[in-house]
Image 1 (cartoon, rainbow, N blue to C red):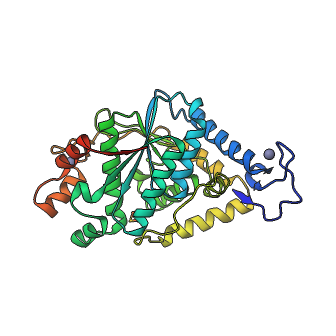
Image 2: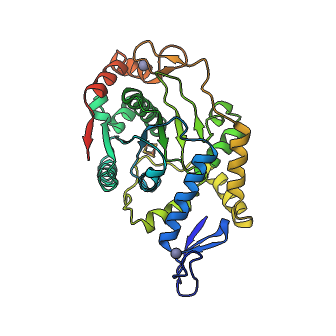
Amino acid sequence: MSKILEDTTVYKCRKCGRRADVKVTYAKLLLCGDHFLDYIENRVLNSIRKYKMLNNVRKILVALSGGKDSLSLLYILSRIRNQLGLDEIVGVHIDLGLGAYSDESRILVEKACRDTNIQCTILSLKELTGHTLPELVEITRRPPCSLCGSFKRYLINLLAVELGVDAVILGHHMDDILVFAIKDFLFQDMVDLAKMTPVSTGIQGFLAKKIKLLYEIYEDDLYSYAYFSKIKTTGTQCPFKYMDPFKIAIRKMLDELEEYAPGFKISIARKLAETLGESRESEAIQPCKYCGMPSKNGVCGICNLTMKIYGEPLGPKIRTKIREKYCFTR
Ligand code: SF4
Ligand code: ZN
Ligand code: ZN
């Protein structure tokens, strides 16, 4: 992890000898803000090479929630894009209709895309389904985060397929990935555990490949990256935010081990990637008979859910709307 130094008068940057602003504990490095940004970008480039993340990838879709993780990811991508051989980068943000939180997140995403000169697509849940997330929670009585995750995954995958991108880039950092992986292991959820790989292969035509570019980047590194890049992040919180006690306990354990042995999390993340190998989507996945998106039994989760709400599967209509109209801002 990295720690922003409070007293910067004593230490010098290893690279340029100027005042050090940050201590990178796992690498025993003291760096100034500028060299810290370079350092993190190089670590991402190394992950891209090591895990062959962008092999045969020319066009990417970046999922942007508006939080520090995804916005830092966008800035990192924009600063290293010349070294990636990409033809096109498109950002996507889902406006969930969560009041001030959604409004602020959308504005921050639009600004970040303008600053980095990356094309931005905003998909509105209300426009596509007729309801905001709180309204859908009220109607279905399903847990908000599970409902939110289902719609976000569906819409991002659908847009990726319609745009014909080679991969979707996700903003999950190493701390989150390890917490999810350990929880999946404890609950023996091997299907979800298998998804904790740096790259998940897709299925041509209906399931996009997914890449976790921040696989070896600590959450603290992203705080520091956002700070030194002067990235503005949300001051509001999702009204549905829920702290899962299992995840809090696992994170606490990982943080303590990292404190005791700096670099421990990186070793575990590398072992995890090695053990899981390449994630291949199950052959049992097939296109939904209504909308053509991934399903396990011929009807996808969103068509299934919307049939119960509206009496008809909404997938085909959502697909047509996305095909015909998505909002571009630059
Ligand atoms: Fe969605 Fe839950 Fe995140 Fe809110 S906290 S944005 S409901 S996943
Ligand atoms: Zn320096
Ligand atoms: Zn469907």
